[in-house]
Image 1 (cartoon, rainbow, N blue to C red):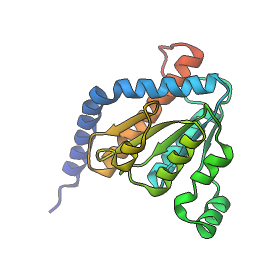
Image 2 (cartoon, rainbow, N blue to C red; image 1 turned 180 degrees about the horizontal axis):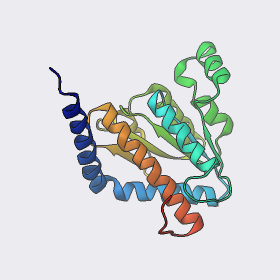
Image 3 (spheres, helix red, strand yellow; image 1 turned 120 degrees about the horizontal axis):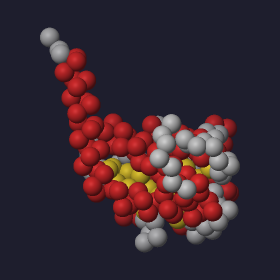
Image 4 (tube, rainbow, N blue to C red; image 1 turned 90 degrees about the vertical axis):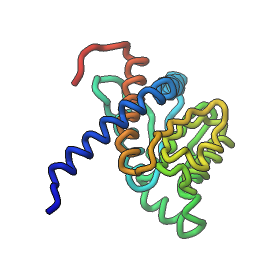
Length: 201
């Protein structure tokens, strides 16, 4: 008989252990990524975000935290999740190729000084890779969130970009750390724009 409670406890333990291990490796890079995003927003730039599946949900989550709020009241911040417009996504996928669904939006909306948040647990998503290439052509900087060694995205990033690669091979564990990193980025942005705060929501 399967012990479901034991499996649940193991998931919690594995997730907690990875987060502690990842913090030691990723904290300085997350701090740099958050500072890069805050600099972009203070310079009247915007953040575009993209990903597929669960990473699309993370991209939308991040944009919602900026346009709405994270933990404290502040002015709305310009962020656009490129995975939300179904008419655009299906038109580009149908008329061109699915690899171009994000890149076309980056070319249409991105500008020098903007930031692309590119999320791919494998680091090999073709449409995210194309979006990064389009962002570089627009002189945008990239904050890439990956796992599994970083894949092709890790090889594509420029010196001014930030790579947040979760040191784990399992997709669900990577996604759990991605969500925590997104909240860290939001917190850094708020702390930069509003000042530090000890209170937690």
